[in-house]
Amino acid sequence: MKPSADNIHKALKEISGVDYDVVEEHTSNIVTRKTYFIDAINTLIDLEDRAVKMIEDTGVDLSSYDNMYYKLIDIMFEMIFTDEQISLIETYLYELRFEEGWDGLIYVGEEKEGKPFKTPEDVWKVVDSLENQDK
Image 1 (cartoon, rainbow, N blue to C red):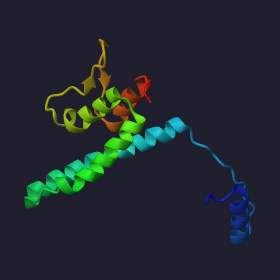
Image 2: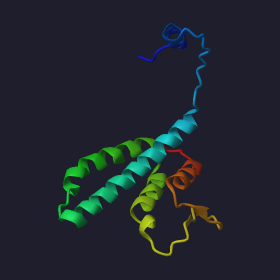
Image 3: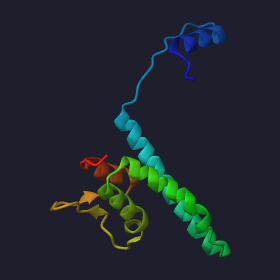
Image 4: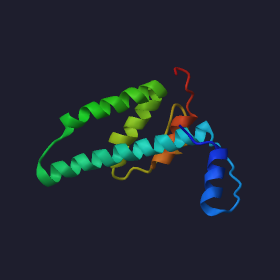
């Protein structure tokens, strides 16, 4: 249960003897979704890097163990994103990040001008800009 501003105010005053103003600040749903998305992409990158390092260092492939976690993540993405958005996310994670000489731009649909697509934040901007009609 989340403590109320009044309870926090009372506790701070009792502990310190100083009167505080407690102000609740709400983050927008868009900011929260963006933060969660970027964290998820960074975590997936870390997991992939860890798996590659494990294979290189020890010869042990734990991908069959990790598959159920990836499946869970895929299911959650399918609940939130369209097929086109998921395709872009997967392209970034498993293909473009490893392309040598790639200019860091992606061309979506019939756009003539490429959009930056080199960081998880770039990916968010592109994915978020697409219509989310199916969800």
